[in-house]
Structure formats: C-alpha cells, structure tokens
Length: 400
Image (cartoon, rainbow, N blue to C red; front, side):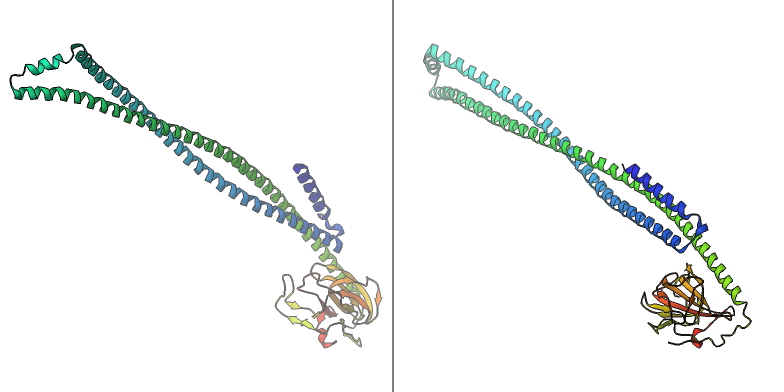
C-alpha cells in the first residue's frame, strides 16, 4: 500500500514538473501554478523531514532502552553465576556435614556398644568383680584409688554418650539449616532465571522495534531525496517560465517604445497628470538612488512607491491607450499606458488588473487594484512616467 502511494505521488509530481518544464506558453497563471506546485513539494519535504526527526527520536529512545536492557541482562547473568557458585558451595557443605553426622553416629554407636559390653559384664558377674578388685587392694590408699577409678569409668561413659549425642544433634541442626538455605538458593535461582528470560524477550522485542525505525528512516530519507530532486526540477521550471515572461515583457516594452518613436516630440507637452492612487498620499520610496529594499529590486528607482492597503483603487494618471497589461516576475501585475508623444505611465505590483491591451482609458478611470506582487516588501503602487525612452521623476509632474 505504501509503495503504491509513493509511486502515485512520484508520478503525480513528475507530471506536474513536465507540465511546467516547457515555458513556450508561459503566462502569469502558469507561473503561479508552478509556484503552487513548488510550495506543495516543499510542504511534503517538510513533512518528511519532520517524520525523519520523529523517527530518529524514537530510534534514539529505543537504542537507549536496548542498552539499558543489555546492562540489566548482564547483571542478571552475573547474579545467576554467583547463585550457581553459592549452590555448589552449599551442596558441598551439606555433603561434608552429612559425612560429619555419619562419623558422629558411628563414634556414638561404638561408645554405646562398649558401654553395653561393660554393663553386660557387670550384670553377668554381679558386683563381685568390682568387690574382688577392691579386696585385692593392699592398703587403704590403693582401695580408695581403685574405687575412684571405677567411678571415673562410669562417669566417663556417661559423659561421652552425652557429648556424642550433643554432637549428633548439633550436626543434625546444621544439616537442617544448610538444607533450608539450599532450597532458598534454588528458589532464588529459579526466580532469577525467570527474570533473565523476561528481559531476553523484552530485549528481542526492542531490537525488532529498533530495526523497524531504522528501516522507516531509510525509506523516509529516500522519499526526501526524491522531493529534493523534484524541487530542483521545479525551480528550474519556474526560472524558465520567469525568463520567458521577462522576454515577453521586454518584447512588449520595445513594441511600446517603437510605437512612441512615431511621435516627433519627446516633451510631456500639455499632458496633465492626476494622482494615480486617490486612496493614499503616502510616498514610501522616492525616485532615483536608494538601498534595494528586497532581493531583486533595483537600487536605481525609476519611479515612486505609494504605500496603500491591498485592494485600493489605482487610476489612470492621464487618458491614453493600454499597451501592456501582464505579469512580470519583478514588476508583478502591471499596466503601461501610452499618452502619445512618446509619453507613458506605468503602474506596478497590482493585486488585480482591470484594463486590457488596446483598451482606451480616461484620466481617473480605475485600471487596477493595489497589491504586493513581484519584487515587493508590502502592498503599494509603483508609479513611473517614461518620456522619450527615459524615466523621469513623477514628482515633477504630479502630486497628491
């Protein structure tokens, strides 16, 4: 769908450019159409640039998040490695403790068996063995020593059994604690592995999203390149149309001059001029040398500028015949009137022309409306008087 849309757009703008590429029939309307097409291309270019900027921002955010996920994944992997090491250590401790417990049980068993043998011997012999042992004493001191020895043996057996039992209980408790810690470590390992898997899934999704943005940026950059080529072609077309309009303007001016040469006098004679813009007397730029107000405008001003709102009436300064009524890329919409004797008046930058070539107009008749077409910085009337092929200062012949 997107490819068909791009193809249609490319064909559309291609046709637009082809339609304006050949200025043989160049007109003011054709120039305006060409400029509108240029504006449309510039708007599409701007939209594409905004799209690229937005995609770059999304790509940057996604890349930063991927980097963050990578770091998180690495940290979780380190946690898992530490947990695996802790689990191995804990399992080794459990095995050692089990060995200690088995050894303690075995020692306790041997001590218990030894004690059982002595008890059995005492039971079978009664107390006679101990009595014989005591009776064989040769002195009271020896008797007491032997009695103490017998008591110590019994006490030792009891003490050792108690110690072995205590050791077994201590080791059993240690084993229980180690087993609990081992279970907790295994549970923590399971949770950490689940976190690891979750981050891996999220990372994969973000990497896919990042690739999508990169693909969209590449596509948009391709569109931008196409718009730039189309704009360049449209600019060339506009220049060609403007050049053709200028040629026609110059041709019309020369024809008007040729017509003026039929008159022998170049003086203004008894022609009386009326103020060409009754709605305003504000002169914004005088005749002669000046700083160029805008790119393309002459620094040698061949008339006067009268500032007025757009749509203000422009009237014929004197009666005569309209010899030029057209559009110029520099003068905009303008009219030239021949008053005879090689004298002409010009009215430039109009928003609308109301008189056509060949039409006879009366002094004071509305022939156009004030505008800001061509090389202009704002709505105004450029009024000029041409006599014998040279522009003269209108202020010498007319005033508001």
